[in-house]
Image (cartoon, rainbow, N blue to C red):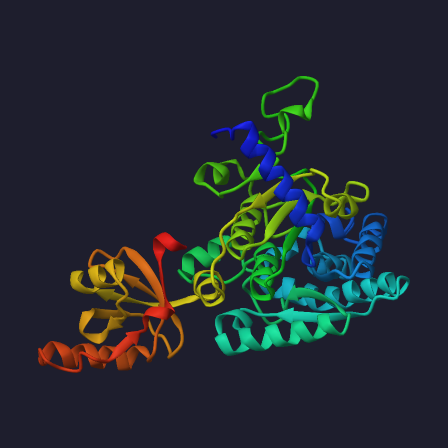
Length: 405
C-alpha cells in the first residue's frame, strides 16, 4: 500500500480526531465475542464498562444507537444446546427467540443503573428493501432519539433467515442479501440516520496487517499483527487481508470492511476496535488513536445510498448498446425501447440490475412497473418501431451507475 506523505498524514489525523470528538450521532455495534462469555452467558465484566461509557456519551448530549449481537448464543446456552446444533436454521431461530429476551433483560438492568431508557428495535430485510418501510424506520428512530431513548437494534432472527442462513445457502440461491450480519445492519442504520460515526467493537485490535503468528514466530509474538491505523478507501488489497467469520458470530473482518465502506459513503467515520480493552469508547471519542479508522471526505446522497446498499436486487433488465451508451454518457432515463428482455420477477419500485448485452451490470435503478408489464412493453416496441417509446421504466434520478457505487 502506498504511504501518505507526512503532511497529508498529519492533516488526516487531525481530521480524524476532530470528527470523533465532534460526533453527535453515533452507532455502536457490539459483537458476539464482546457480549457473551465462553459459555454463552452475558459477560458482565465486559458489558458493564461499555454501558457506563454509553451512558456518559448520552449525558454529554450525544445521540447513541446500539446494535447488539449475542441473542442466538444466549438462547443456545439457556436451552443447553451444543454449538453443532446451531447449523440448523430453525434451531438458530428458536435460540434467537429465547436469547433476545435475555439480552434485552440484561441491558434493561444495566442501563437502569445509569437512568438510561432503552427500546428494542428488531429489523428484517423488508425494512430496508421497501422504500416506504425504510422511510418509516427513519421517522421512528428519530422520534426515539428525540425522546432521549437508547434504541437497541438486532435483526429479527425469529422471522428472518438472512443472518442465520450460512453463506453457502445464499450462494446457492443466487439471492443478494441486504444484510447477513449485524456489521452491515449497523452500517445501514448509520446511512439511514446520517450518523457521524460507526464504532464496531470486536475481539481484535482492528484491521491487522498480518494475522497473529503469521510469521511463525516461535515466541508467539503478536507484534507482527499490527492494526492499520487509517484507511481512506476500501480496496481489494484490504479485502484480501480480512479474515473469515469468527467462531461465535456470523460476521468477520470482511463484513466489517463492507460496513465501513457503507459508513464512509454516508459521510461518516468508522472505527474497528477491540471491545475488550479498558475504557475503549471513552478513549475513542476523546480522539485517541485506537484500532483502525475508516474516513472519507465524499458523501453519497440518501436515495443513491439506498439503491446501492440498502436495497436487494430483485431482477435484471438487459438493454441494447444504444440504451447503455445513453445512460452512461448522459442524463438519460431507461426507456422501454432500450430494453431487450427482463429476467426474474420484480414489482413496481423494486431495485433491478441493468446489464448490457453480455450480461455485465453497469447500473441499478428503481423500476416503475412490474416485470410482466415491462415484458409487454418490450414486445410492443419490438413489433412497432415507433411504439410506446416514451414509457420510462427507470427515471434518471433513480439510477446509480456501477462506477459510482
